[in-house]
Image (cartoon, rainbow, N blue to C red; front, side, top):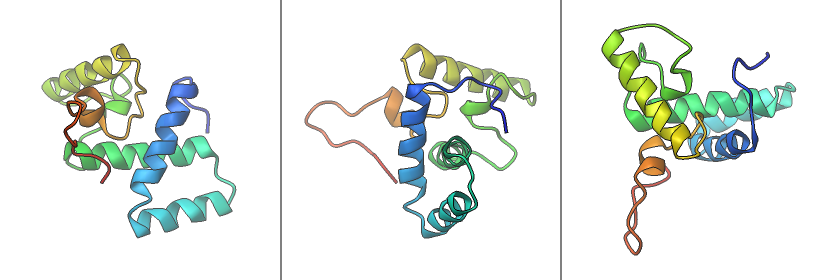
Length: 119
């Protein structure tokens, strides 16, 4: 599958983090392992992991698209606008549209204080 969005090194690093984070769930880990065993590309598995992470981290409903798909789909105008703004903030910060932990990436914990991370 050809990506509608060019993939760069920042995106690949986000895929790596997304696969690690989503893979903490044993069901997701088995799913990813099965895809890799069938020869699925790292990019496609990373995209699926990022999708899973963004849905989970942002508490989105099944009918809501995560920021990684902003500008690519249509829907409720208020939701789409908010999603596009979130994507723009990610990109302006030099992050990937596939960032698995959007909130913590945009608002890191202050030095010396542990943040809400990972899971």
